[in-house]
Image 1 (tube, helix red, strand yellow):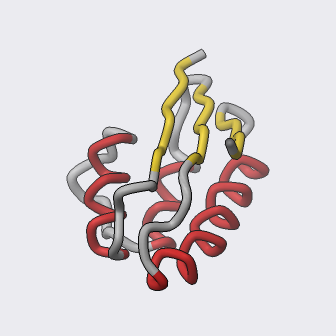
Image 2: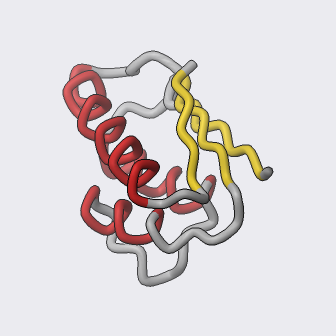
Length: 88
């Protein structure tokens, strides 16, 4: 199983987060850099993949956004049997 650790500790903006997600998750070039697009590409994953979400928010903007990100990751993991989520 492939494991990807998403450490959001040093990310302070939503824009930076989506750039990081695109890189860390090796998302396709058509990834729209928003939560709906993230959900869509996560549901396309075929290889068994564990995503570990770690780190504390680096800004108020991220503190408000991370619960929404976690919910999208959880929803995608429920819909896609190849995707597993852990929160560190």
